[in-house]
Length: 346
Image (cartoon, rainbow, N blue to C red):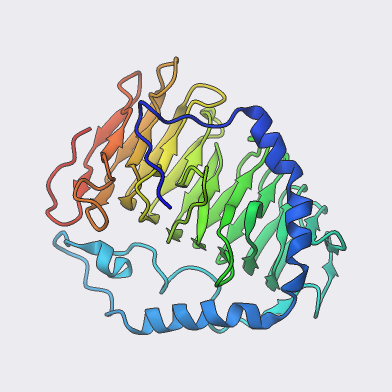
């Protein structure tokens, strides 16, 4: 199915909807109890290994390169060759092989709870939601595979200093889409780092209002009826002390709605966000740039990004950008078309 969304028609759910999706975690995760075998991640691993092997080696740096979207890593962007769990990793299945560790435990309701400050989860295959309610947590070399309406891959609740890196977050092959890959449920997490992950077969790849989102490969977006599809979205702005930085990600959304990257004013004015050196294709608009609400955004810097016509001639189905901000500290510069290197104007 396909949803058509333009700036004039687009609406998003209110705060009550966010509370409802938070309440859905336990029910959705319980339905995933059937996926306890490590065999569930064999197919994605084989797919990525084959994809990586088929790609050419990185080209030498130098003159500007065209059509980076074909093999992003050859231009220094993330793709299946340089993100996610390494092929050499040996993963233990939760809960079949391991059900707890320092600061975390599998809950019989069907999810993993991370409750201990400073906890580390690594080398795990988890076919459930990972719910983080502690701070200074590290999730590294972990595969999170779950799906369904209201489903979360990794949910953050009132956290600070969480790092999610070198991990795969996705819907298992043949399942419905994963609705939220990484989600800051209450939109109040601080100093989050999300880097070098593969996130795919989701409706929303990452929802976060602050932090450092760097070097991720977000692709193959999917939608069920009623979904709005965003590779990465922010629902309100951040502060100068806790900004949102989105750099050097590859985000590919084949669906003709809503975005690759979106700065919305659902719950407050936008501001203090940098979108830099990303490779983008698809969505209704590739970027919703923040000026879609009653407040004029400030300090929105969008620079050095590549827009590809891989799915639509204009980058997104309706164009490369909507709601470009022109307030104090707002910058649009150095953004180019991937196929021609010509300047993209808002």
